[in-house]
Image (tube, rainbow, N blue to C red):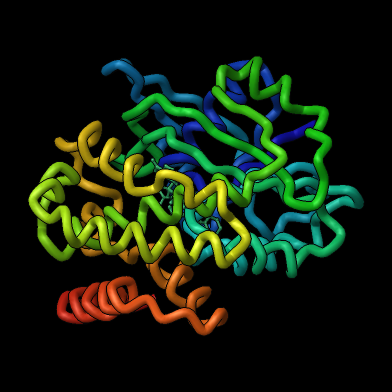
Length: 303
Ligand code: NAP
């Protein structure tokens, strides 16, 4: 069974190369003819691991090709996910499976609504990768990927392929809890690092702000039916701030590089959920306003 991979950026390349190295069939799906030509001119995808670069010339195609897709790894940003899948939907074979690697929440529902007959498997990953050139990715941090399907408990038959490919993963019956927990950690840390202009460790100087946000987020998680994700949230946020003190958060890096953030699927999603439940969360809502003002000052999209 071929793995079609859409989103040949940091995470998508990391998955595609490891699957292909394990001898599994992989086909890349590029956004348009220019990107396909650029990929061919680059001679393939390069992965840099422990300072060693390896280039693999994987077959690539456009979304508008006609061959059926049985298994799709969707590895674009959350804000591109729905449109990318809508363009591919006519190619999905009966019983097709999609693995959604997007961070945050919201994009998964939008994708699933576009492909009601397909099975959508959600992922939450702590692996780290970044691009240091076009079609060139650096494997920056080992991590783990949780996979799960909110609508079915049974894992797919192909999990052993991830094992073969050396992609550390686990199957969970409660992937939504994992995604909510990661979203809450993100909301408590990333926007503040942008507003204070600091590394994660710099938040140790703002304990009251972090504490207030964690209390509001824990209340929201419980109201949204995610009590496990609320458990000891403040303690874990503290541990993450300490353990990643020297790092700049992904949102900090996006803003510093003038890139669009995934705010609508993280802090924006949390605030929208609170509004739906008529829950007033003054600190979280003020944080969203301040973050949007900060993005506006820099000419970056507010969604
Ligand atoms: P990225 O490096 O920006 O890559 C996204 C890729 O998607 C780009 O190559 C882009 O193409 C491609 N794309 C967008 N729309 C497309 C379309 N319609 N057709 C084909 N390709 C399309 O993003 P990333 O860092 O891998 O992040 C992907 C998701 O994983 C995000 O939700 C992120 O939060 C999550 N995540 C990332 C990491 C990490 O370490 N990077 C870790 C955990 C979670 P172009 O190259 O043509 O622009």
